[in-house]
Length: 119
Image 1 (cartoon, rainbow, N blue to C red):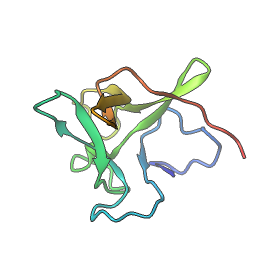
Image 2 (tube, rainbow, N blue to C red; image 1 turned 180 degrees about the horizontal axis):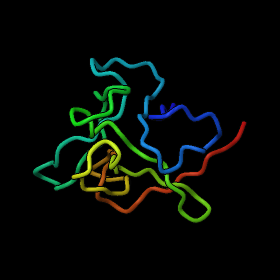
Image 3 (cartoon, rainbow, N blue to C red; image 1 turned 90 degrees about the vertical axis):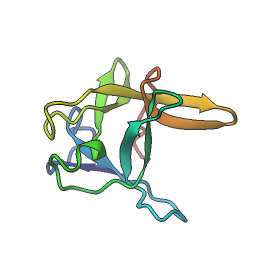
């Protein structure tokens, strides 16, 4: 579920608009299934997307909780760039990092393109 900063009703009308991402699943983790961008990992140098974000509350205390959907040719991409929340932020595309047998969503790898399907 994509939760837009402003009230947006049209499908994908929220492109390039700051939004929160909340996953619906059976969550056994103590953190809420709301995306946040972690600090840079010392080993990989990447910033991992993880649970523990907060819905709403745009401001200097929550810049890591805001993402965007941006058009990329015929696909879309997920981007971390909350410039409407914080002006001094390093923006970047989200991509897939593979380590061992695991895959993570991170900022700093080749972008991960997505396509939305209308039901």
